[in-house]
Image 1 (spheres, rainbow, N blue to C red):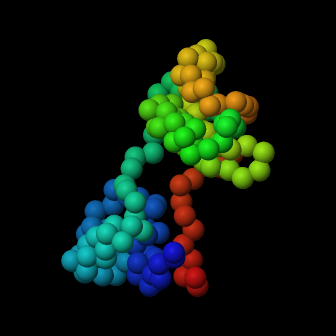
Image 2: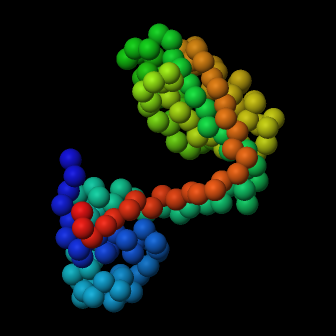
Image 3: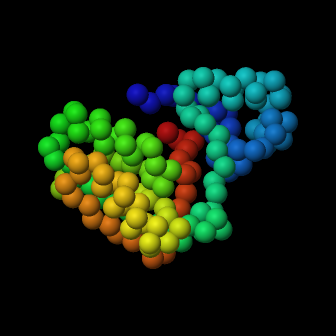
Length: 158
């Protein structure tokens, strides 16, 4: 269910998406509110769940993670038990950055990072494929990142 936000809340969200480490004082100046009113609105956006969390975006390549892969997964049989088992397993692995449930010819899409191809291969064989309900794995290796953002567009007219 969508929450209706006024132009001030939207402005706060735009600024925080640009720089989540901005001080409340600087944020209040940019928005044109008193610091106390700005802080109250920010806290409200957190309480109602519009702001999920504040995080640091790390450049995985600078930490030696050279492999980025998107992996299609199918489960067999596809039922509550195998889904629960699969989701429980993937949450154990820090290499799996994201997991999406899909419609169509595949059940899941995983975003996986690894140090190198050997590490990636070992992770797939020794960890991921240990789940007996995984019946299909197809990897697409990323050869370049052309756009990457976590920014959610927030428009005034919506």
